[in-house]
Length: 346
Ligand code: DAH
Image (cartoon, rainbow, N blue to C red; front, side, top):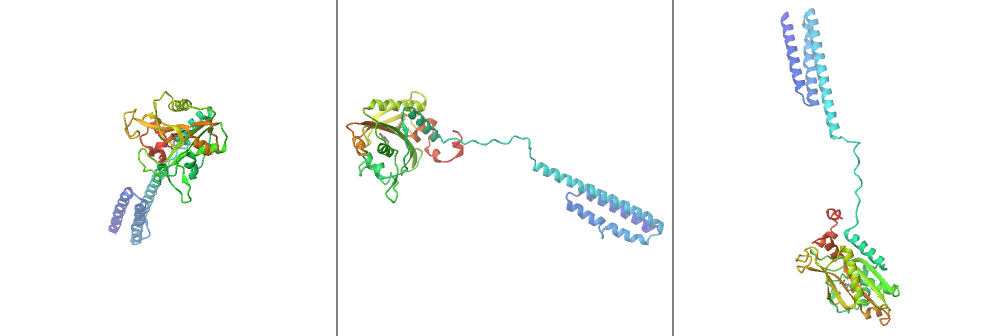
């Protein structure tokens, strides 16, 4: 009976050829496992062939048996080799994805920097301390007395208007300027007195490119036996030239502030547009930089200083405005934005 042996032989070689092809074509472990079960599993095609061995003559049985074992071994080796290849590739992919270069220098710490307004404030403090002034601090929540009354601002003055002032329910207010620190300075120290007071002030303003509800000022005051407008102008020029590090164009106009007499406003040629006109200078070419004047006798008197014996000058500087000028900024809102793209430039 050579017939069945022949067909078993060709069945085996067909089977082997197909299994080899599928092992080659497999692209996942699952596909490979499916081939293994189908060919080599307990109910697989090789097992079925081996069941038929019993019906063969002894000689054929031995021959086909060897052939069957050879096919089985060959397929097992191929499966194992292919599986090893998959594993190697998976490992490579993982190593690639999780690659870490331990020899690379670590990124250094990113240093912070002082806010541009703080930087400017420190410069002004340095200048004035070098001129014999003391730097004073005052509360942001103030009494109506210190913010208004003691500065000779009468109760019906428009500066007290609810539109400008943030009033607290208990009758206190958020200081609308740094001038109340003048009063606190006079209350605490006896003349002669030279002080500046930088700080944050608040006004109930509609916010736009040139108005903020929160901004910074520096107050300055000098009280002595004999001071004059000439002194005042001299100090203001020193201040402006120091900040801009050059001779800067300014203009002085009469200005009204209840706490000084005479009072002036000092304008700075707009450095954002070089006097051509822009939103910062409201298209005038000039920016109000500070108010100043000789301290009103009433103000001295209310703080217990005899105006017959002492006199003084004072100024209030818009620090935020000044920072805008210095850095050529046309929008005041950047300062409070907390935007790191802005802050990292300083
Ligand atoms: N306090 C004023 C303001 O906020 C500025 C000012 C003007 C302060 C004249 C002064 C001064 O000390 O003398 O507008």
